[in-house]
Length: 68
Length: 329
Image (cartoon, rainbow over all chains, first blue to last red; front, side):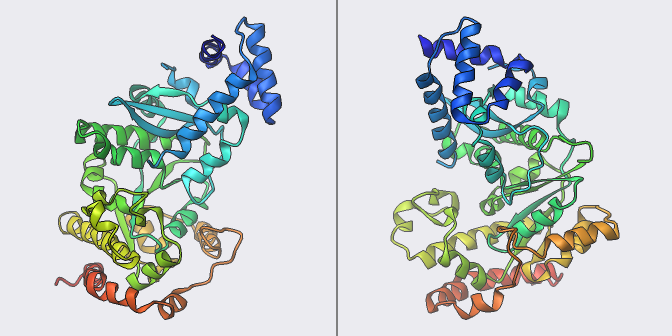
């Protein structure tokens, strides 16, 4: 369920320039994850660091497989 | 995800995929940064190091891409650079990119994904590919800084095979084809082969070579056959739709002379000086000064390289040279 919450929050954030800016400012990975969890929680979307790391991992795989 | 293209103004398309036949585009946040790395994918890779980009890679439909290109893309690229690999094409892009008004796209992988889409999905039509190419190149070249007003695209070497499709998509864009003495190219690939020369990584069928045949060939033979296919595709296209042919030996001055004229660019003396300055450095390692290596490459050619070049590549090279200097054979 927390993965669905994360996806829903990611979709919501797209239209919110302020929250996007706050997240872009977190240039260190742990700080980014903490801030994302904090912003999600404040908006009622519960997810954890493992969910975020899983998305990052999938994105990374997708990128390195671009020539396949 | 259906995003308003206005939300993507600081993003660039970084990936094109077909998911069950449905095209999808992934985007990467770049802000207003100029992409100065020798290759587009290196630029993206650098930005993917930020946790924001590692996490947020919006995916949109190809319709959103088209809408984005329509709203924000440049109307028409100023020129395309095709090449035979290891022949100075990156030097050309680094020289063009040294001028702030030029946006230079160097071998962006989303363009390759579209060009090779029919190999993955035979249902894809040429008309679709042409439309996707226009959208993708338009979006990749969108002006993110006020001074940017021209877009150049350097393609991967195997994209010469797709010249007719690219011409269909861009009927009026000037094309140039850069090549080099094949012995020097072969020596470079035998030192460190490009991915396009590795049949286990890059499908040999693209070059009309069966995988089972490819794996029984020597590295020299496979490399020479691939280069021959690319040369032949360039020559075939040249007959009906002449491109500006450039030999590596003409670099760097040909960039501010013949190439600029062909692309209809007028450069001020200061801009020529700027490009001359960029040519002083190794295009792929800009912190290192450039030193010509033709003589060293030729002297290190093995008998196998010489044999393959004589058999498969020298005749094509001579035809390219004849076409370049305007002698019909």
